[in-house]
Every structure is written in C-alpha cells, then in structure tokens.
View 1 (cartoon, rainbow, N blue to C red):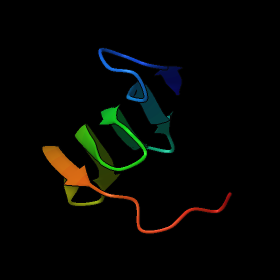
View 2 (cartoon, rainbow, N blue to C red):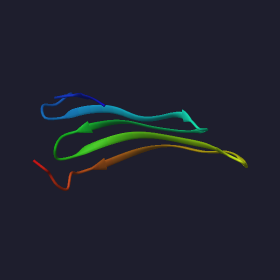
View 3 (cartoon, rainbow, N blue to C red):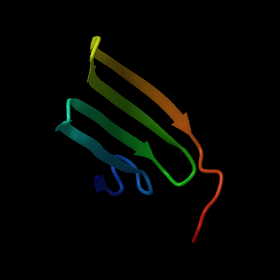
View 4 (spheres, one colour):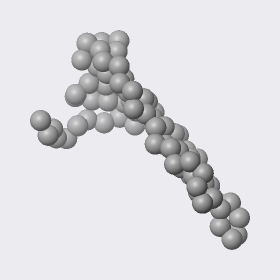
Length: 76
C-alpha cells in the first residue's frame, strides 16, 4: 500500500494498494484499490478478479466497485 498525505486538501489522504495471490496450484486472486478521504469519510474504487481451474473447467469472476464510507470507531 502507498499513501500520499494531504492529497488535494489538508487532512485528506489518497492510498493505493493491492493484494495479489499469484497463479499457484491453478488458482489466482487480485484485489486492487484506490482510496481517498479523511478521518471522517472516504471513497474507494476497487477491482477484484478471481480464477480457479476445476475438473469441469475454469471458474472465474471479475468485478469493479465504488464505495463510500465513514469510520465507525477508532483504536487510538
């Protein structure tokens, strides 16, 4: 994950990150995201791709999403 602080506005950060499960044992998974916001709200663009080979062939799913949220708690 990469974070740039005070992106466009003071107190608003942008982060980009990824979870990548490379092709191992005929399975793979990608989760990529781009999030912007403050400690009060955020918006996130997300891409998820998943694939697995079974005895019946390839099973896969790809999706993109846009979400908005607010933190419901803080730990510090």
